Image (cartoon, rainbow, N blue to C red; front, side, top):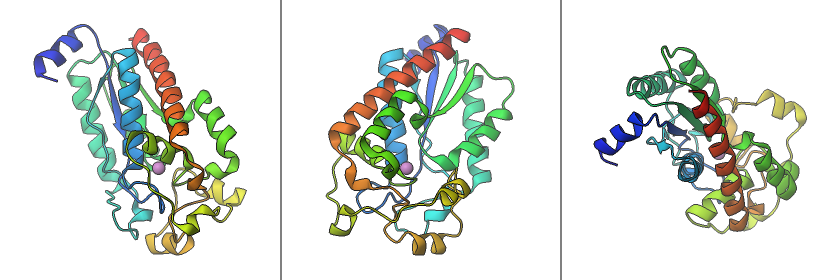
Amino acid sequence: MTWPEVEAHVARGGGIILPTGSTEQHGPMGLIGTDALCATAIAEAAAARCGALVAPTLALTPAPFNTAFPGTLSISEPLFRALAGEVLAGLAAQGYGCIYVLNGHGANIAPLTAAIAGLTPSPPLRLKSWWEFEPVNALRRQWYGDWEGMHATPSEIAITMATHRRVAPPEAALAPPERLSADYIRAHAGDRHGPPDEHRRAFPDGRVGSHSALARPEHGTALLAAAAEAVAADYAELAAAG
Ligand code: NI
């Protein structure tokens, strides 16, 4: 867009969606940028429905536990908190009617929450991860059940199959990964995965409880539509409050 187009949008009271993702390994058949690609695609599809603008995606974020895998680029949590805080303050200062942060990476939630808490003054602002919405979860449960897992999930890989490209799984990835215990899932919520070498030793192909090979491009199309619909409705509610 040009700046006069943005100015006109802001003058109408229009808001903006800020996608946040990561740049990290996503198992043997998932693209490095999966989290950023999913958040961006859903934000753009939601924006087409609700008339929001979409800000440039924050794709360099904390993923320290995955740095032993080639392709992963991680920044520290304090740096990401500061970066997100300054970007949000910049958006707030530009006068958008509302700011909607659409997240695609678990480790972003704590620093984003802290950045948002430090933001004054702020227009109406909401943080959601795309997998939080019930219509999205119903599809994830229906197709993958517990094999959705924690990382390199079939749902996120299905979305990138629909929006970008399909990578054939290597032979070993046609079989399910090691099943996670309930204790592991509890202890590692929010991507608290520990030192990178240890993490790669524990999950050598990068899948963390997720059976990525269950992903299908047609699932991705449906997940993307369900998420975009839910985000657009949630955004509209936020915008109406502004
Ligand atoms: Ni991911």
